[in-house]
Length: 239
Length: 239
Image (cartoon, rainbow over all chains, first blue to last red; front, side, top):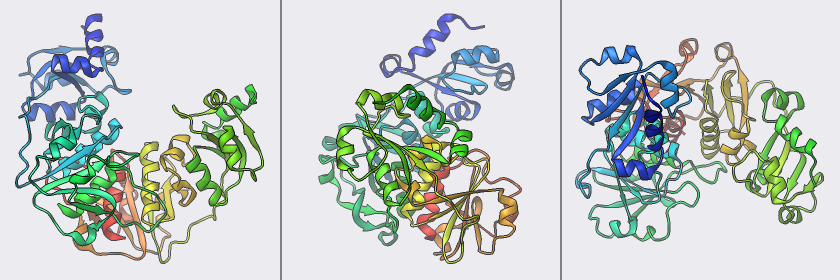
């Protein structure tokens, strides 16, 4: 049984200011919720169909709901067995960059793109992502779902990029149209790859910190590639 | 000046059956409309702000509209200067495959994914795409816009894939989880790359026609990559 207040409360978490104030976000579907459990995140409240609840007998704070109730709570067009209110993990103030490859996102606006990029990072074993403050919010439900569970394994720090990059002491690469051909560049063991905004690319304040531009050669007439696709292609060559 | 009938007529073109019956689709924004003009497609009707209309004095069938009128006609959240009703180009019954690389899409459902894949094809100079009949419709306005103009340069044939692949005489590759590592496979000059559906991958009826599975090695825990990202990564290695 759920109350009107449950529905209202979940809906408040659609807004970033409420998620930030409460330190909570919403995740839906068995795969994602299981990935968050495996990663050791705290599920503050879980609303689940009886079948899911029976498979997770050890979990506290599970409210069994009907399909109709789940539909009232869910942000999804097709609710999927379980909705969890999850505590945001606490991050260290700044990530450790030495000895690994990390991503820097300069103004990725589209929640689907951000989720897809985190899924790509996870695929290539990258756990550190630093995003500009105007990048979409990691805990926006559309981003959370688009990560397909990768949010459990990839951390995102929000920073003012130019100030932060000025203090970084690992190599900084950038996805740009006039750089070294990724087919010839070889593999890297350490460094950051900057991916720019969907429309305007990497902003001028960030460009001076890019030591090595990298380019995906094309022979067609498309002006650019989708930001997530570009991230995936470059990482597949340098990782 | 536009009439209520203009608005109603444009709205009918949101539906595939009307687009098919009329042989028309809608494209919006100066970049996309210019790309379609350059490709030689016929603009049956154009609704444009005065500034756009003045820059295209030679065009027939241009109705000058106000921003408010464009908003009434547009499928976009942010209408962009011009909306054109475009005649679908006539395709040959079947594409020529010899001597080039083509893509085969097995049930790509998401219009944004389909548009992004066509943009990737265009980037790599691929002009032939064959899609299963349950793939999203190329002329769905969301697909058209997501191609960012690449729809003007890439053709899509809809086929029953297993029957069609049975008659194909070029090598057939597929994006699969247990195939040859794309880093070691080398470049190809001719062949088809099959990309599967976002959730279920390549369907069982199509699998027997794949002569060479290709795999993007990952070291993280993500179960899969987005279909468009996988297409982009594989093409960047084999093209």
